Image 1: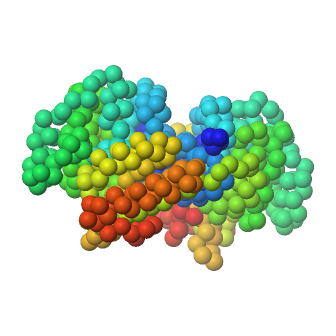
Image 2 (image 1 turned 45 degrees about the vertical axis):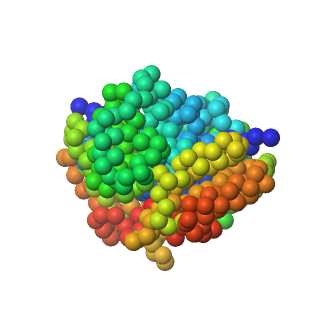
Image 3 (image 1 turned 60 degrees about the vertical axis):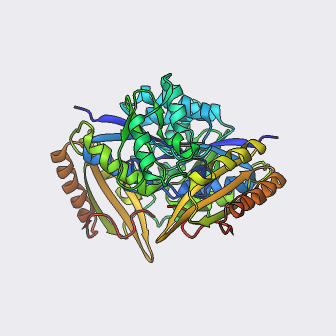
Length: 254
Length: 254
């Protein structure tokens, strides 16, 4: 069975302006791999209601699951809950349990209107718990709304993802060699990809200080096929006279 | 005049699988800010032809400029040029100048078919130069195709972006204080955003080890309005009894 598909919507001007480096895509991707759900697309969009509402409706229809991050705090630029309510055409209502929990947390007099706003969720939403903050994440239909602050996002992902219906986890095997160039591997890799059409066979140049090389990765939801393709990648490097090393290179991200 | 809009398409299974952390969004965002072009959306999509072609056609129609990264090397998963050709409905043809340059670079016998493939560009494309590699970036219409490897991407951005028609650069002022919470600032920030509708007024919690706080940012293409709003942000923090510090907090990304 094909894994269920997911889209991740990062809501935040601060990523688009280059002020902030996103750290959440990787956290969600890895949690979804483990749960056997395929992350098919990520979009980063600004804090503009029409842009958010249109994108939410497009993506919740197109993918099995939609995750969002950002815009759920107490300030004027925190508009995600209101936009989700509008996308689903339901009112924003005070979630009594969340209200009482928030009220209990703040010292007397400081539970002001802005903070009370955090207890207002779209009708029908179920809160997403997290162990580190009062940020009001929630699930509504196939949409899961989480915080943008990475520490809180991570706590929400840890709580939420294991509760979603699981598929076969994504497995992956990597081999790398120094000194090899992608152009030397292109033809045998094409053949290998043809032999394993159900897998992703990828090649990734890396640059680790004075030494550089290429990493080869076989990835997919069929554990046995991944393991066979992995062995073929190793032999491919050996056959060309390079020393295959297992795993990711020292600086896989460059 | 409103700044021109841009979309950035990150093409790559390795970002969606969580194997690689994107580093290019921030580089492009900052270069575009400087050139007065507004980055409105980022999408990360997999190496699947139909997905790439549909997204390219949707986004090049919807935004003034479209930038892509990834998928322009010599291997089987490098399919961006072919997809762009299909999106524009033009053939992929051998770009003679690029072919000769590539041929001159490789030792005799190693300029194989896979490497020759890098000289094939969509008809009408103009190469994007870069100082660090042979990766074949190109521009076609309002679409600019660049490499995924960050070092090469950065070299291409440095060459390309200053040649694009410039608008007023994005200016931005930041003030931050320790100990303050977003919920204490929400009401005056709402008022300030109403006073400066042409700017983005944002508040960003940060967590710098044992100390935490909030950063306030005013951003926009009207330099004078940004400077006035910046002064207002400083006074806002002072008025609540906090010490305003100029610039970004020690760890703005957390």
